[in-house]
Image (cartoon, rainbow, N blue to C red; front, top):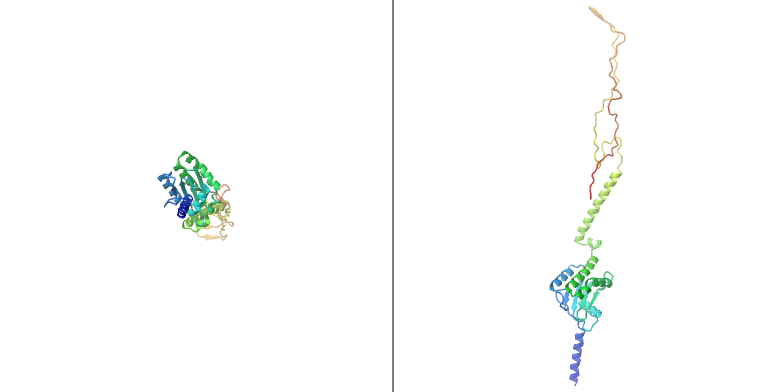
Length: 285
C-alpha cells in the first residue's frame, strides 16, 4: 500500500512539473516557433532584422500551442526571466508570445524599456501589424511587420548622442565633419559682414579692397600746369660796328609767353573716386 502511495505521489509530482513547465529556447535563433506557423524565409528575415539592433537589445518571438495551465501574463513573465531576454545591464529585451491553441498573444518588455517603449506603444504596434494578419492566417507577414516596427522604435532610442559619438572612432569623423561645416559657415558669415560693413575708400586709396572687384577706369595723363615764363631784357648799352651801327631800344620787347589753356580743356584736376562699385553673380540654390 505504501508503494502504491509512493508511485501515486511520484506520478502526481511529474504531472504537476509537466503542467508548469515552459518551453526551452532553441539554438541560434530569435524565433522560437513551437507552434510551427512561421516559414524559414520569414525566420531568416526576422533574425537578420534583430541582429542589426544595437545596445544589446533583443526581440524574441515565441509561438506555442498552449500556455499549459498558465495565464498568458504569467507564462510570458516566467519565460522572459528564465531565458534572460535582453542585455543584463540595460534590461532592453522584448518578448512577443503567441498561443495558437488558445488564440491569445502577449507582449512584454524589460524594465529598461518601460519608459522609452511603454506597453501602450507595444500595444499599438500589435494592433496595427499583428492582430489582423493573425486573424487572416498570414502569419509570416504578421510577425515580420510587427518585429520590424518594434526594431524601428528601438533603433531610434539607440541613436548615438554627441557624447557617445565623441568616444567612438566613427564619432570622431562625425564631429570632424560637423566642425568643418561650422567653420565654413563662420567664414561665409565673416565674409558677408566684411562686405556689408567695409570702410569707404579714402582719397589716397587707389583700388578697392581685395574682396571687391576693381572698377574699370580710363585714365588720361594730366596736362602739366603751365609756369610763369621769365622775361629777359636786352641791355640798353649801344654797340658800334664799323660800316654800320646798331642800337637797341631802351625798352626790350618781352618774349611772347605761351597762352594759358582755356577753361574748356579736358584735363583732369586730380579728383579721386571713393570706389564702392562692384559686380556679382546670381543663381538658383
